[in-house]
Amino acid sequence: MRLISCRYRRAERIGVVTGDTAGLIDPHGGWPQSMLALIDAGPGLWSALAADPQRAISEQVPLSQVELRAPIPQPRKNIICLGWNYAEHVRESAATRAAEIPEHPVVFTKNTTSVNSPYGDIPWVPDLTTQLDWEVELAVIIGTGGCRIAAADALQHVFGYTVINDISARDLQFRHKQFFLGKSLDGACPMGPVIVTADEITDPQALDLRTWVNGELKQSANTRMQVFDVATVLSILSRGMPLEPGDIISTGTPGGVGFARTPPEFLRPGDLVECEVEGIGRLRNRVR
Image (cartoon, rainbow, N blue to C red; front, side, top):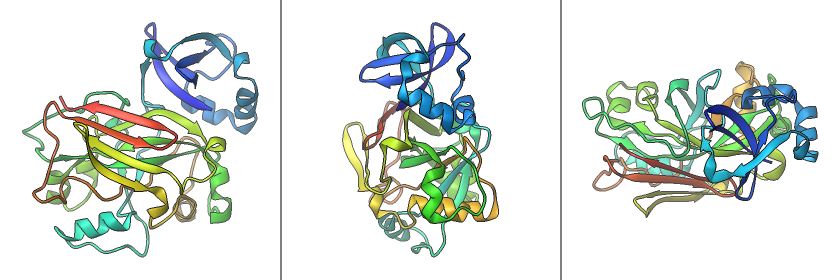
């Protein structure tokens, strides 16, 4: 299934996308009314919805008539992110600062308030940062939680996948000697446009990722190039903390980011940045 969170006729809704049509879940039929509530309902309800989505849908509307939100507009917890999870990104980073391919995942988080819609504007605040950078990433949504999950079982805990642009304020990131402030600005986490459920992506290590800025290709890679694959990441994270339904893990960006270019390139007002993961969709965000 391709699932959305959206606003339609001033109401917050969730829905199932088929082609160019959004099937909106019935607000009066006892079905979950938010993506987190749907995830919390568990595999039995997911299977029932997938088997016969029309049972839950109260109206079909053109996708163009709904305002897409991030699939999880208000996560319960910070988005967990991986740094330097593509070897090419490590190599390009090493040209400007100390970096080497990690032996263990590099983990940080983005504040929940950074979440942005798939087509929302990215705020430009020049007295705060002038070095906004792009980072296309595959994001994993946890469906069933657990601790000390074996890598062989990890993908069974996945509800679905989406796209994140891990917008980064490089001047803040490097000035403060850590990632959190530079990664957590308002609107710095465009997400979506949909969640594709895990049953439709049988191999998360075989997906192309691309970024364009004003139509110019900046990043192009495949998730098979990850240093730590999705299953390994989930297993390692769960060793020391529980993974819970609705958790979002963004699995790192490939080479081609702006700060590592010669000369460095950063986003400016009016720029359009587009991030795409194969089989999921494309984010389109204007810097305003």
